[in-house]
Length: 237
Ligand code: GTP
Image (cartoon, rainbow, N blue to C red; front, side, top):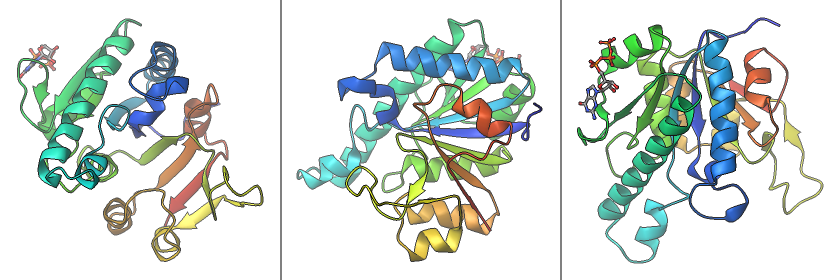
């Protein structure tokens, strides 16, 4: 089967890396994901990844617990950098070149984010991992995914989650919950479906950037989505 997309941006939540252990990085989950990314790169797909940090620290949780929101969000950004380093290491162990770029400068560890350089890395077949979100407090890594996808001209955002799409209610609590196969951006906003925050959805809407929400835990799903299989939920104009 041929690929439907040439350049994709995968949004991976921090929680997706924690596997069954409920915190931190599960080596098995990390290796499985890295294996799937390596396969895409070998198929000639240009892959950019925005990684979250919720498996280590969540800015919102920190501020709810009484921390200054800005400080808490900076800690969250550093958490995404830790995940980025782990992911870079896991993908490179499989022989696939990567570059880690961060929105906050930590030059000893990663390249600073430079859009033209990121694009060049992608053209050269390197997997580019973006860390530290947008570099600003009050923005989520979903918004960073929308922003980076537009900047590097990815054709689609693949939002890898722990459920197999967007439902009308939480399928873990309501067995009658119905999965949407297709939604418009306005549906997501007006029905208040918590798939991505409204800033991220609005950015995608203004730029007609499609989003596919799918279950990361089914082996091979990323490749299936890229080959055009009808999985999860497509959010588009
Ligand atoms: P080309 O110019 O396309 O060949 O890209 P390149 O990334 O191979 O070139 P460069 O010489 O810039 O980078 C070589 C290595 O150094 C890569 O692994 C980069 O990720 C890394 N690197 C480049 N700039 C920085 C930086 O500011 N900080 C850190 N930590 N690493 C960097």
